[in-house]
Each structure stands twice: as C-alpha cells, then as structure tokens.
Length: 347
Image (cartoon, rainbow, N blue to C red; front, side, top):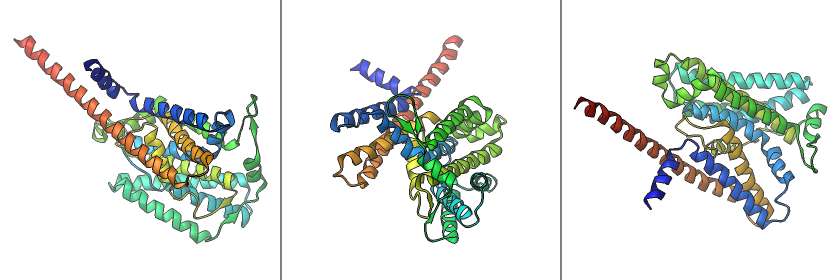
C-alpha cells in the first residue's frame, strides 16, 4: 500500500501526468468505439476527425498560448464567424481575388487580437472582460454586414472544399484544411519550445512579476500572444469557410468553449505556465471521438457530447488540482531538506 502511494505521488508530480491521462483516454475511447461499432476502427475514421475539426485545432493552438500565459480569449468563436462573413461579402459582393481576401482577413484577425492585448497590458484589464467585449463586438459586426447567410461560390474556395489529398496507403484521404492545420501545429510547437517568445510565454504564465524581474518583454509578449490568437481564429475562419462554403453570423457559436475544453483536456493548466501545444491535438481528437461515438450510436442526442465534455472537464480540473498539490508538497519537502542541511553543518 505504501509503495502504491509513493508511486501515485510520484506520478502526480511528473510533468507528463495530464498528458499521459489524455493519451490513455483517447486510446480507451477509440478502443471502445472499435469494439462497439463495425467500421469504427479504420484509418479514414481517424482522418475524418481531423477533417471535421481542422478549424478547431487551429483555434485551439492560439488558445493554448493564451492559457499558457495565464490569460483567456473568449472572442475566438466570434472572430471566426466575422472572418467568414467578411470573406463571403468581399468575394460575393465586391468580387475580390480570394487570395487577397484571405490575406486581409488574417491581418484583421491579428490586429483585432493585438488591440485586445494592448488593452489588457496598458490598462491592466482582466483578459476575461476584454475578450468578452471582443466576443460581443465581433459577433455584432457580423450582423452589420448581413443578417442572412452568404453563400460562397468562388472557384478557389469550392476547390479547397472538394479536394481530397490521397495519402498513398489504403483509401485514406484528407482535405487541404488538415494540411494547413498540421503545419500550424508544427509551427506552434516550434514557437513554444524553441524560441525566446515561447520561453517568455511560459515565464509569464508561471509568474508575471518574476518574468518582469528577469527582464523579459512582458508587454510585447502579451500583445503578441493575443495577436497570434486572433490570427489563429481568423485562419480557422478561413478553414471554416472552406468547410461550409458560406459566411454567417451564427457560425461557430460556443466554439471558444470547445477550444478551451480541448486545451484543458490536452493537459494545459488553466492557471498558466504549464502545458504542451501538442496536447491540444489530443484534446481535439478526444472531442471528435466523443462526437463520432454518438453519431455511430444513432440513438443519443447531440447534447450528450456537451454532457460528456463537461464531465471530462471536471475530471481534468481535478487532476490538475491534484498535480498542483503534489508539486507543492514536493517543493515544501525539498525546502525543508535544504533548511536542515545548513543547520546540521553549523552544528
């Protein structure tokens, strides 16, 4: 029994604790689906998870950086919807070139996020309030453009929606949106773990005051974090436009909460300072598997997805709390040992 407690305590203090739980949960869910339903265990089912959730993965990447810094961004779903509306309007009413439209909406998303970051940093406002205001502003701007859905029939968008990229083994294929999302994931992993920007993000999330004392560019980094989140939300809006071929003010309602759920389930602490960008991919896949299981069942309401996600969030928040307590106890123990040694040496 003592050995089990020691092992469990060691597991709680390991930096990979939540990541291990996430991967194990994904394997268990996929195994359950494979046993319960014919055809669930196939490469294309996994690829369909990526195809259907490519936009969510991109939003989750931006949200991961925000949460790692100790903040939150509630505007991402509304920025996604605004991106689809602006894209649809520029394409259908003003007949802009699609590449120019994509560049413009990505720039607008980054500027929108940077503006919120400046408000948070220079005026010392809470990220929750600022991004909540950004959520209402972006969603309201959608209806200034049009209260109806705008269909997109631009050839490039249609081609991106219908193109299948064969993988060269079996009958598996992905969409171009999946390739873009995976490239963004690779870029985000590089930024988080191999650049000064990434180290500053972790430092701010761990202790902003200590980051300032270390001479890190806290203000500049905060603004860049929210600009990156806005850029990711806009890019997700472009991918969503490919997926839906329409712009609509009601698109992506509640997506910001799905993104937060994916990040937390992926192992990132809500208090900031700890987590892995790659874990967000696992979180997105878990949400996708839950939706797929419910779709395969056919008798359950789609609201069961929200119920299961809610339960998972409770479990992962509890796991995060246990991990924090375990780390605190380990730190206290090390401090006690360090204080005993000088006393013994003095004696």
